[in-house]
Image (cartoon, rainbow, N blue to C red; front, side, top):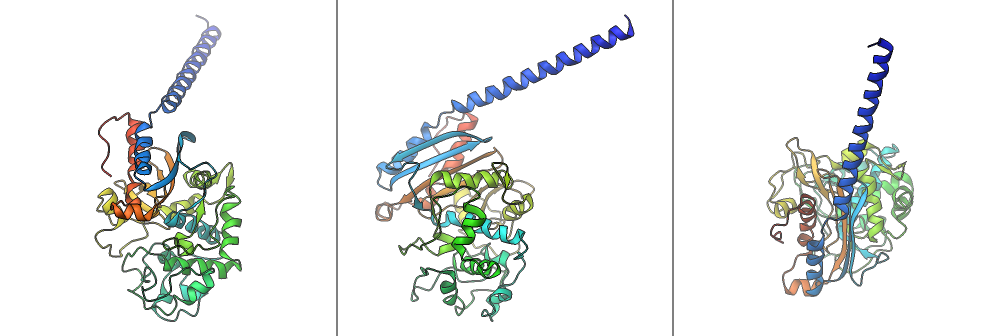
Amino acid sequence: MRVVGGRTTMLSIYAGVLLMCSACSSRSAGTDQDRLSHADFSRIDKQVQTWIDSGYYDGASIQVVKDEQTIHEKYYGDYTAQTQVYIASAGKWLAAATIAVVVEEGRLAWSDNVEKWLPEFKDIKGQATLQQLLSHTAGYPDYQPVTAHRDDYQSLEEAVKHIVNLPADTIPGTLFQYGGLAMQVAGRMAEVATGKKWEDLFQERIARPLKMSNTHFTPVDTTAGHNPMIGGGARCTLHDYIHFLEMIAGSGVYKGKRILSPESIATMQADHVNNAHVPAGQYVMNARRQKHTGIYGLGEWRELVNAKGEAMLISSPGWAGAYPWIDRENNVYGFFLTHVNVEKANRNKFSSFYASTVLPMMVRDILRGDKGADREL
């Protein structure tokens, strides 16, 4: 065999192997897409419909995305793609991302103390850092005392005036206590640092770049449970929040445009509870029966972590049922949008806050082809 001919033959064989590998890869990708397009989500539909038939919700909607492909989208009851409802604590994730943009701009730092921007905080509350405010470890009371006016003020400036004189619960960094008042202070720090009102700041840094045209924090709704503004006052539609999750899951990029850096995304998802005491009965322990203490990042719950302590299931559930999540283990994200009928739910001791947590686990089961028994709610 001649060298030149042998070389030509070898190149032909190599090219053939590449074509075969490419074809196999294409067939594999196609097979995966076909499998996902035929995944049976009827168990989820049945579960949501059961909640609606029980009167807990007037309607609901859900969208699940895997590998940048929508694998399930459904509307129940009277909900449509245009339905906009208050999402309670699901707004905490949006708020933290807004402040993360301000940090990236160099206008704030996660280590900034409250007193640097709000010198009226002269007691120990002024020593809390921005990072502690957004991770519920600042030592602030969770909500206004029952004897005080509920925190439904129309501006963060007004809200903070009614927080500054409240006694601190603990020294900053020593106790995890989920609540809303500390986030009000964080939002006000961002306002002072940028010279902009919170709604304008959110619209400029997050909502408009992500085409979230139906998402707002103002005006503040005075219905009990929808406030405070930063931690519980946002309202949105299904697709709006999916745009936000697409950005977070995409390491800060949305439709080719960078909104946040990968470093900021990683910071938000990292453990910020650190050495603070985590009392028994917290959300992650109840919802996932997890005993790890690294349960919270910045504006988001770290529901499941791997052996390295990295967050694999991240969420920001609202008391009224809205539930956004990112499942990093399976490259899935989704949003369940709804709003509870409080009277009917209380009558049957139904918890909308915990009920929605079954959904990401059901999605995992579906993707594995597990047709086993329904999960406990």
